[in-house]
Length: 130
Image (cartoon, rainbow, N blue to C red; front, side, top):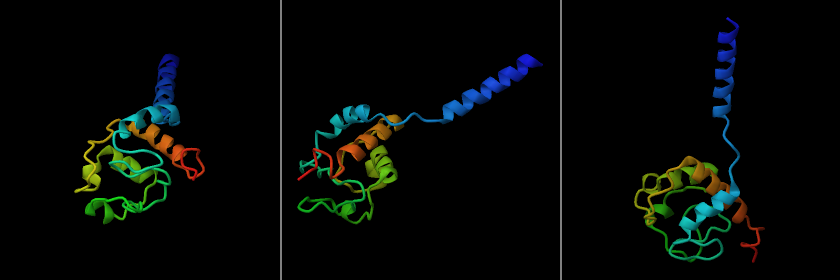
């Protein structure tokens, strides 16, 4: 009986630990961001819009950037949740977006990327100070 109780306690502890996600890894997120740099930069527009000031910004609203009509009409406000959904599958979240990148399928990569973006795109970050 004792062995069964210990096995059950171990299984419960393992299950609880499996449900706890590790904190996002900002350094890994910066490595994931390298994929984005083919089209984006933090402080200036490229093929895609710049990312400084991203959190809390209305999608399709960077002055001077030519967005798709779909992005302009999306009414998305960028936060952790909306970025996670968009980065998972941009075309699914915003059909007609000009962003042709297929997305970041791995949830850990997305969480780390979002943590990096949250830190790096803050208007007070060195990259975004004007």
